[in-house]
Length: 337
Image (cartoon, rainbow, N blue to C red; front, side, top):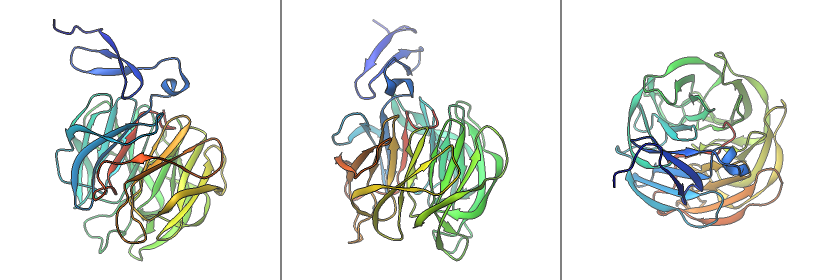
């Protein structure tokens, strides 16, 4: 018997009720705290090295290993930015410098498809989002002599409407390899490598996602950091960041609504360098992959309870040890939702 629009099911992967609209399944917010903020699905797409096009998924609320979704990113790319609402992931640029924006469904996954284009090709940027807008921040352009030559561009798309990105404003500094976090109203951009000097910074910037304009100074982290980390850690109250030059296990938190410096949170379960993926729900921040001091990738996933402080705990493993860094990372319960 063919499915009819309006059919409802419970998706055990995302821990959400879903409704069928005649074409695809879409998440319905439930009554639990996790579901009220959009769910607990995490998705890592592509990655390096070697370059992978796998899409892997896991449930933030339940410790365990990531699993292969059975779908493909569709193009060979990594080192791009990501944004999401509760049902759609959007992926900005990537290496080698691309202006393309791609998207897919978070509840039903699927191979990514063309969404539109950024105003210029870039890689090494990141993204933030609320329930309406996906915003691309920073990155390195084709003229950059290295991976860390920065851009100050902020551009946005409407997540549920295909089309090209539109200018939003500028960052305070020209930055690539930045980390991000967000509440429903405020975007945080932290660390990164500035312009052609490639020197890492410890500055924190912010802007209001609903209002076009430039970023402003927020405060400082305790140490410089960058490294092409992707996705955003934290919830609507706190952002969780990984700080330290080259390899570090230091985690700090930012109170998003209050200007000021970041504060010590605890330690990761290992030292990691660049390429870490961040995923979050209303209660947990999960980080996975990245480089280790041996210059090899790690597929280890760890997590913290966002509103406490303390050291990270083992969560599980990504599916591929060799392509476990610099992928596109989204979750449907992050702080912007």
